[in-house]
Length: 244
Image (cartoon, rainbow, N blue to C red):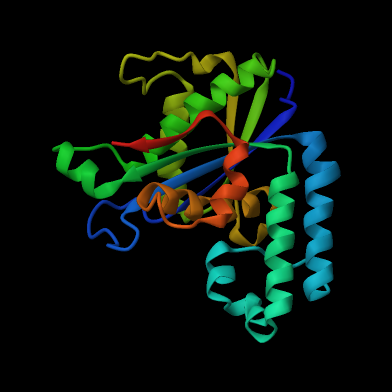
């Protein structure tokens, strides 16, 4: 089966564990970035590498939204010079704004989920199902039916990866359909790829940068959220799902 012309990167924000939700962020967010491989290899990766060279002098910096927001660890340099901090954030926002990508995300409110269902599915499984439905529709629209598409996930541990792969393969084999929609995931061949946090994947870094701002937009829609406004045009039609 031929490879797809597109590749997807998925990253999350918040914990998928239902018990003891964080009152400041009681949601689980799964964010997927879909990109044409030519645009990824020829435009996005080189621009991200150049950003790293310009600000830290090497390309081993891994963009983590949490560390950037807190200006800690490899991003402690952002505390020193406000002008450099603003320049760095502007470059990141410009890179996202210019990237030719599609964004698909699901936000699961864990408190509401627990109240509504006596025995709810895992927030990760629910979010993955929503995202894969939209990925399927978009990839078919892009003429990718009958091809093998890879979805890249950041590894979270042996047990967690095994659970996620089980969810993924169940969905892709049409064994997890629920609700009135019955999408045919067999129209494509789906292949999950789990990579180490230190892999320095440009696609995973983009997905990571977007996940929390998406969750905050759902939690506090009236709050100023510049990062979300930058990525908003990338959301496909119906590409942001809040549940329940």
